[in-house]
Image 1 (cartoon, one colour):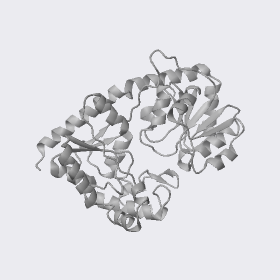
Image 2 (cartoon, one colour; image 1 turned 135 degrees about the horizontal axis):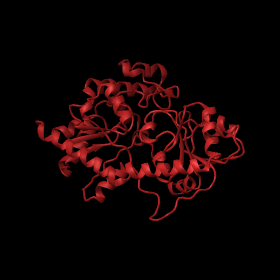
Image 3 (tube, helix red, strand yellow; image 1 turned 45 degrees about the vertical axis):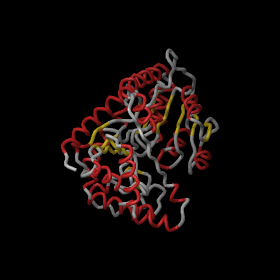
Image 4 (cartoon, one colour; image 1 turned 90 degrees about the vertical axis):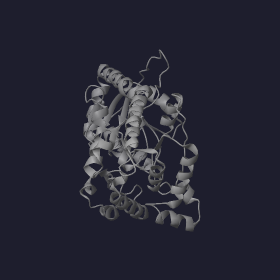
Length: 375
């Protein structure tokens, strides 16, 4: 959201950002928390807040990046009443999966696409395995499904990949309203800066079960090669205990420091064992010209051309991962070739200017829909 708002402002558009956080509920009293839970599918308070903003700001488009306990689907109805076009970026799979991530017991799961979402309660699929949040998410899911996935109010959805678009269509969303636009990042290299080489591999991200660090730990038991893991999470201690001495844990680092570590590591490993959306860390590794080894899941085949701009391995298969790493360690020319191809792909698809063109095309199409509707 921040990146898109900045991009639009740089091109002369007037942008107003409205942000809420669920932390407001956690810090509030029990009555407010209970009210938010009761109104998870439709909040009059959120409706009135957005309606007031739309009256004052009078935007052409309301672009929503997320909603949950405070910003409920009622905000789209407020925009509809005011005749404001609406766009919703689908950062997760909430509209077609009550667990939001197509994830069950830390493995990809698409069971609820069959229209029987009650399994979210049985397996506590909501992130963190919270029963309460699973109940709330199921209630929101059922109400949203009853409202035709908000399609009467939402003029355009943005999926982050073709893979995601197909899953949303399979779940029941209207395909004619779903546009594909991935995330983007600024070029991390200054003009004429030459990518460094260095030695070693790097993993960047949250250290949790679905992120595949256990698989990395198993693979590294038979590797004598430097590995840096940047990030933190609930499994850090257990993963550290499984790693050999050649592995360094840095914990959370500021973005600039993280990028420097990535620049010094010719191999970038993306071990996530869930579908993901459009991972920024993966795009950053491509922009830096790193040789990428990633799980063969979700949209990865759209981003990485296996054997050309990166290497894919079977999720959860530590031996397959180890073989692919050894392949790069023993073949520096291949490592360099993959990195060059990855950077070329970034420059071709994921730079701000390309993304701006895609976003403007979506906005223009959405505004075309708006002119046809009756308020």
